[in-house]
Length: 89
Image (cartoon, rainbow, N blue to C red; front, top):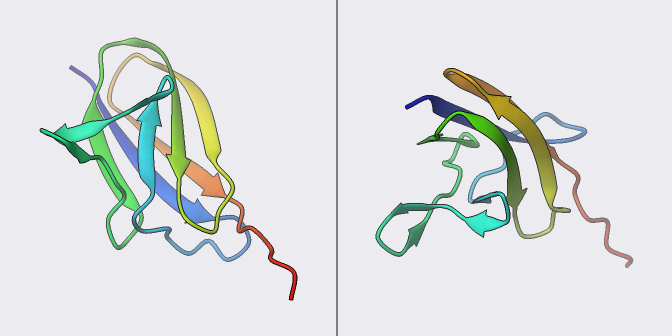
């Protein structure tokens, strides 16, 4: 099975976004059991996928949900860029 490597980064700073929950085709991905797949402290995670089209999304507190659609044919790496939510003072 191909491996999809995901890096979640902030739009303007390029900093990693840790603790972003990953969904695949609208379904939360589980790393094992009932534990959701989330980005680590450097904004990275990976999963095994079958080949074909996939929509990968990242959801994190204080950020807009960000998605990317790709065609998985082999081991693939993607960057998901998240935009911070600006809050009024």
